Amino acid sequence: MLSYLFALVVGCNDTTKEGSPNPVDIPLSVDSVKVLPERGVRSDTYLQCVPSISGADYDTLEIRYSWKNERTQEELGTNYDLYLASDTVDIDDEVRCVVLATDAGGDASENYDAVVVEQVLYPLDLALAMFDGVDAGDLMGTSLARLGDVDGDGIEEFGISSPRYSNHEIQAGKMYMLQSHEDTIDDPIRAFEGLDAKNFLGMSMVSAGFIDADVHPDLLLAATGADSNGVDSGQVYLLRFEDYWYTGSIDVDISESFQIFNGEEAGDKLGTSMLGPGDIDGDNMGDFVLSAPFHSSVGYLFGRVYLHLSTQQEPVILDGELSSGLFGIQMASPGDIDGDGLAELWVAATGGTAQKSKVYLFSGESLSDGEISIEEAQVVITATEYGTDFGKQIHTGDINGDGTIEVLIGAPLDSTLGYQAGAIYIYSPELYRSSDTLRDLDAEWVIYGEGPDHKVGSSFALLNDRWRSSR
Image (cartoon, rainbow, N blue to C red):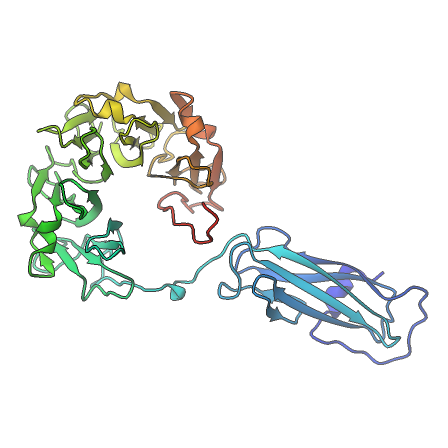
C-alpha cells in the first residue's frame, strides 16, 4: 500500500512516469483521502490532500488532484495543496479534494475527502467603504452607532465619531451622521463638533429613541472630557430631531441642544455609557439612561447611573456598591423580557485588578418606581477571578433563533486560555431568570480568545442574519 508520506512526495499537478508495469495482483485503488487539517479550517488555512493508494504500477502511476467549493462549484486548484482565500470560500462552505489515480496498466481509481470552513477572515480591502480620520490622532471610529431611520426613507442612518478631532479647538471631537456606505466624512448629512478643547465629543453616542411625540429618532452625544463642573466632569447633549435636522446647515451647533446634562463632579465623565432603551416607566414615551462610572460622592469611584424618565422631573439615581467598582462603565437593555411592557436594564461594574467584576440586571418595574437601589437587582453575575474586566462589553439579542433574548458579556482580560486571551460569556434567559446570583462560569456558552493578549471581548457586536438562518 502506498503510504501517506509517499503520496505527499509524488503528489503534483499531473505526474506521469514511463517504464514497464510492475506485476501487481490487485487492482489500482485510492483507498482513502484525507484533507488536513480536518478541523479549525479558516478562510486563510493551508490545506493538504493526502491519499492512500494500493495496487498501483508505481513506475507509471499518475495522480491528479481537483479542489472544489461544493456550494459554488468553483474549481479552486489542481495541486496536492491549497491556500484558501476569503474571496473563494464562505462560512460553512464544504471544500472537497478529489484524487484520481491512473497507471499504464489501464487501471483508474478515484476517491475524495472534504472539510468545512468554520471561520472567515475578511480583509479590510473587501469592505464596502472605509472612513479615515482627518488627521493623526483623531481616533476615528472610537464610537459607532445605528441612529434609526432619521429621514424617513426606510433606511437607517449611522454615526461615526472622532473624539480627538481638532479644528477650532484642540481635541474638541467630532461626530459624523451618514446615510449609507457611499457617503464620505467630507460630505456627511450632519456633523457635530465639540465646543471646547479636550471635550472629546463622540467618545460615546447613541440613538435616544423617541423621547417626544414625533416618529423621528432623537440623539444623545457625550463629551466626556467637558469641564462644566470640574475637569472631566463630562457633558451630554440631547438633540431632538428638529434640533439637528431643520438647521439649514450640515454643521449642527450642539450648544442649541434641547437639553444639556452636566456631570456633578470633576472626573465623573458623564456619558461614558448611554442608552435609549425605550419606555421604562409605562407612559409610551421614550426614556434614556446616562452613566458616570467615575463618580465618587457615595464612595471612591463607586459610579452612578441616571435614569431620565419622561414622568419624572429629576433623574432617578442608582449608585454602585463597590469602591473602585466603576458602576455604569457599560450598560445594555434587552427590551422587555418579562412581559410587563417595560424595558429591563443591564449595568456593569468592572472595577479594577482588586475587584471581582459584577453585572446587574434590573427589571423595568423596579426602574419605573422613581426610586431604586442596587439591592433591588433581579440578577447579579460575578466574575470568578479578579481583574478580568467582566462587563467591559454587554450586548443582548436572540443568537440561536429560539425567540428569546440572550445576554453576551465580554471579559477581555480573562486569562482562562492564556494571559488576557479574553472571553465572551453567553447566558440564556432561562438561566439568568432562574437565579438571582450567578458566576461568569455558569454561562451556557463561552467564546475564548485564541492566545495571550488577544483580549477577546474588548469590542463586539451582534449582526443581522446574513445567512437567513433565523439567527
